[in-house]
Length: 242
Image 1 (cartoon, rainbow, N blue to C red):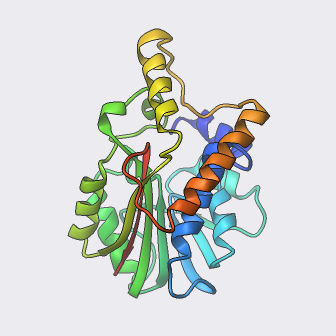
Image 2: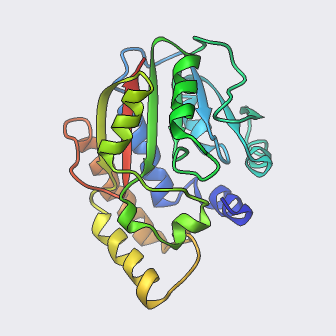
């Protein structure tokens, strides 16, 4: 992503509704794991480190990222283990982790071969280990946000599941997410594309009351994810097992 986006992410991801909701969705899916504590975890593409902080609730996480800017922001957070490394050539031995996460990583144009990244995750996972993925949905919604974030593509759920299966995993659960905010997402994309013609990302400060309202709504959605796969949304979440 553009360097300025790392700074924006670091400043906003503690409280911004989009980041907060993603962590809620991730927690919901991680609670499906048979073992939920003391996991050895690798977060591939750890960004500025907020998800690593959350993953500490489930075990001993460490993160890698290909960009020095990301690692620099991670170092501003306490007790995070990170290093600069490539997602397609993980600097770890085979059968090493209980859980690997790819949180909005595969879509990035820096990932030249998403299947190779998935195969590397498969190699580094222990037998019966788990892979958790979140990523952007629906190529027809491509816009300035994706360009600003240095995206390569947006996925359909079917396509992402197919890639995960090709890498050798068995998909345990998959759903679209941000279902309740999807209409707002479409309106925002259309306005930016055809009316305002802005070239920035969608992540920006928001009115605190609106922010809390969106968090409340998406917290309800995270609870629904325990029982239902949602039919549409602006992102996808997949839980798979080696």
